[in-house]
Length: 112
Image (cartoon, rainbow, N blue to C red; front, side, top):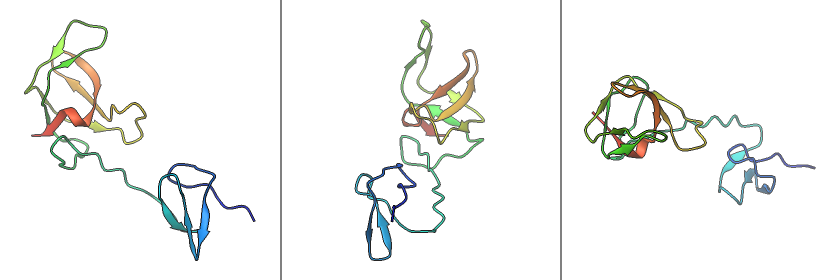
């Protein structure tokens, strides 16, 4: 019998322990046939949960790649959109006044 891959990290090294399936790579535990919808929680630098449409404030000067411009500390960013499946860590999509559309990392913002 072939065991399914881990639904969290897609590891093929899952094993059975009683009625649970366990992934040794990410420590995920689940029951076979159980729907595993995982909600990704994106938090700001202070640990506050962010949501689509929130207003955030930049907590560090951020250099803009390919430009000499900088997003200054204290810049307010309104109406953010979260990107929970961002592979590069830039999990906020937004439009900054005077700069334009860009993506930010949640670790450099705080909820306003």
